Image 1: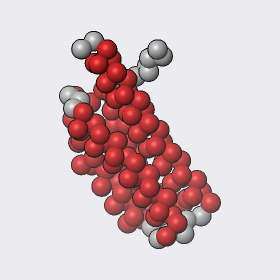
Image 2 (image 1 turned 90 degrees about the vertical axis):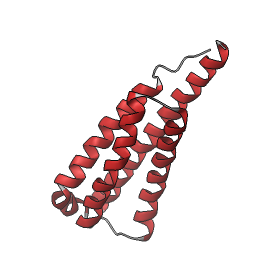
Image 3 (image 1 turned 45 degrees about the vertical axis):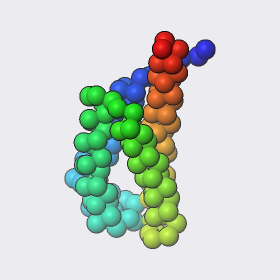
Length: 131
């Protein structure tokens, strides 16, 4: 059996760092980012502010993972990816860099979700094997 190298706690820390950096960038540099991407500044700043409660959940799951909480983080990450692409398709008209910027962050969030799914699955298998 191939063992996934990261545990749930480690994947939460990866998510916490990446999402935390994104939130800081979105809040602190919304004007600069808007100028570079042709995305609305309030959208960028609002997205950063919306990440704050999510970061609290991710931090809680990094400190003490609970299956239901981890599943909630995964679901929110997947919803973020869907919302990112839906927003570009339906509500905004970014420039080429804006499309690349939103696509890159959405793919990073999708990667976080995938890592969390794999880690959760691996830990569930290990728990069943030793039960």
